[in-house]
Image 1 (tube, rainbow, N blue to C red):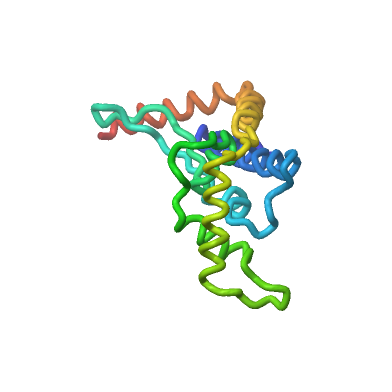
Image 2 (image 1 turned 90 degrees about the vertical axis):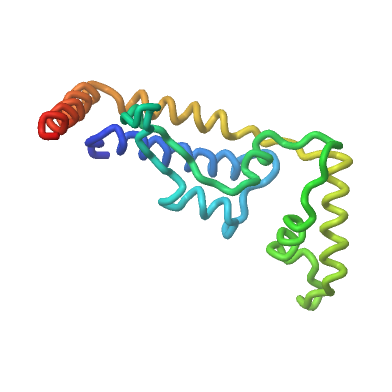
Length: 176
C-alpha cells in the first residue's frame, strides 16, 4: 500500500479497516453472519461509510481531524443488545423489517396479507420486550484494530506529513 499523503488519508484508511473488521466480526460471530444483500453490509462497505473532517474550535479555528463511521441506526443495538422490559421497539420499524425480509410469504411465495405482517411485527416486538436481544460486541474490537492500524500508519512518515501540513498552515497565514 502506498504511503498516505496526509492525516486525512490516514484516518480514511483506518476507517475503512474498522468497517471491514466490523463486517468480518459480524460474519464470523456466534449468531450467524450478515445477509449478503443487507443494508448494513452495503453501507459499511461503501465509500460513504467513512467520513473524515477537520473539527473547528470555539473561535472558528481548525483543530484536529475526526473520524466518523456512518451506519444503520440499529448498529448500536447489534453491538450492545437490549435488556428485557423498558420501552418497546417501534412497530413501524419492525413492519418494515418484516417486509424487507419477506417473512410473511406463504409456501407459494405470495404475501399472506397485511394482517400477517402486523402480527409478525407484533410477535417480534413482544419477544424483544420480554426477552431482550443478545449483543454481539463487535464495535470495540473493530476500534481496537483501527488503533493498531493507526499505529502502523503513523510511523516515521508522520513527521514529514506533520511538517508539510504545518508549513501549509503557516504559508496560508502569511498570504492571508
